Length: 349
Image (tube, rainbow, N blue to C red; front, side, top):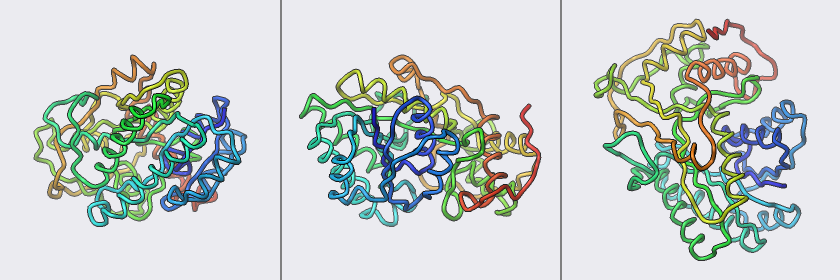
């Protein structure tokens, strides 16, 4: 069985490639490398011992999509490709709408032409917007609050429409919470461009000395320590969720949304303290103003995924931080690092 992975060299995509290959699937990767590096494919091969067919192209190039489907017997698509920075999406919304939505429309059109009707879509918990109720369940009204989130929401609606129009489609919408961690080997992980947007990569770069201190946005929320509480999920658990979703869509039709989270929230300060424990490093931080649009608490109700996909997150916050730190110390400059250049202790108990 051959699976096309769009955005397969990225953070979540690369970990999903590992899980697919280790489970016996053949994969074809499409990526424009705008926010990732081809080096990740060599790392995936090192972990799995298996080759990957790679196309350096873009979903906006419909001709290349025709070529990919003509040259490969694709059975299903896992669709990660898309721009993903919330702040950037506010500044250049048209770029996000064109890339994320038009690219998906091209992909769907070519899939239909070649009779491929099975897709796992990389959605996001951002489609819930600001909610008063936690945990967040799939039946809540959707209300994205930024262009990035709206592209995910619009694509979900497009996918619902194509499923109504053609009953052959089988689609899983996976709404991620906050992916963190790295492959336990330290071989692949998150490699952000510039200053990280996400908490754990920011912390790890402070721990290794690349950044001087962490900014904590607000300590006056109605939480147990005043800082925001989020549902962090290990990227390997997230990748395994894609395999379970793939198994589901291969034996059914229709469309379903699934939350992928741990069902537990951790505060910013709890994450900092846990990272200090596994790294043995003090994480300097500075409290600053809240960011507009941030909410106090967000965590998943993942019971639907547990019931229908037979999936649940297995790794705890200590493992998330330990694997993030292992990746950081073995790859201080991300995929530019060829060999570990930094040594420090890793505390696992």
